[in-house]
Image (cartoon, rainbow, N blue to C red):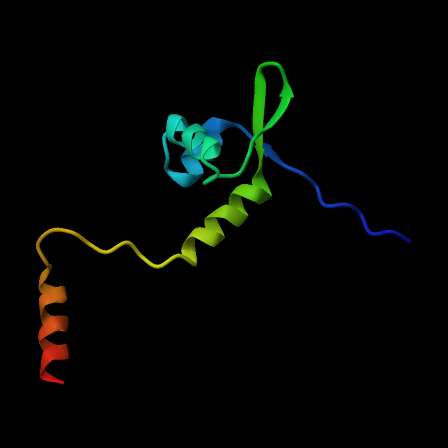
Length: 87
């Protein structure tokens, strides 16, 4: 007996934008530059993303090292630096 195929869930650019907290124009630009999953065109005017691909992209982003913070250090950052210097 064959296993059921996984159910594909399609989401709109508005839903993608809300999930990843990016403007739609940024999403489309990142797609062009290969930094974001490709959408699927269901018809001439209907473009969607596969939900599981967006989720996988989000998980992959958490594997990236955090972006260094700019600006003035916070109190906690100063304290950690002082403790590191005293060790």
